[in-house]
Image 1 (cartoon, rainbow, N blue to C red):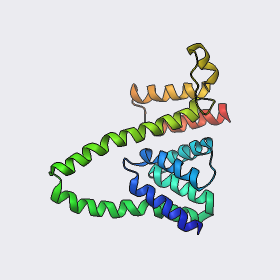
Image 2: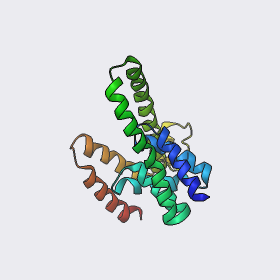
Image 3: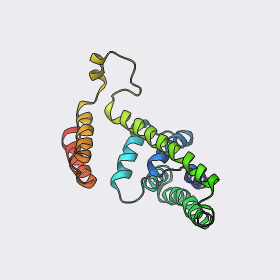
Image 4: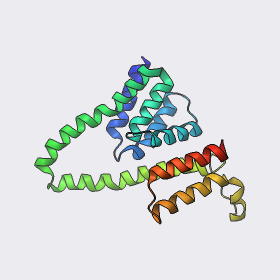
Length: 189
C-alpha cells in the first residue's frame, strides 16, 4: 500500500507541478509533511542532495523521498509517479500546441501560468534560504541590530559569495557546488 501511496502522491505532484523542479519543491514538502514526518532541515538536505546529483531536481527529490520511506521499491514508485504525468502531458500538449498555439485562449493560459511559476520558484527560494541562512524556523520581527543573532554566519557568507561568483564572474555552478561542498565539509562538518 505504501508503494501505491508514493506513486499517487508523486503522480499528483507531477500533474500540478508547473514550472519544473524548483516550483515543485513546495508541493513536495507539503505532501511529504502529510505523508509522514520530515523536518524542514531534512528537506533542505534533500534539496541540496537533489541539486548536486545528475538529473531533474524533482525526480531526484522524489527518488530520495521514496527511498527514505520504502527503500528501492519506494524510490522506483515515487520516481515513476513524478515522471509519468510529464511523459503523458508532453505527448498530449505537443499534438495540441501544434494545432492551437496561436489561439488567444491558449496564449492567455500560458500568460497566467508564467507568473504562478515564478511565485512557486520564489517560495522555494524563501523556504530553502530560511533553512540555510536563519537559525530559527521563522525570523521574528526584530530590530536590524538584532538580526545578526539569528543568522548562520558562514552559510550566509557562502550564499552571498555564490551569488557574486555567478552574477558577476560567471563561474560555473558545478565548480561553485564542488567548492562550497568542500568548504562546508571542512568548516561546517
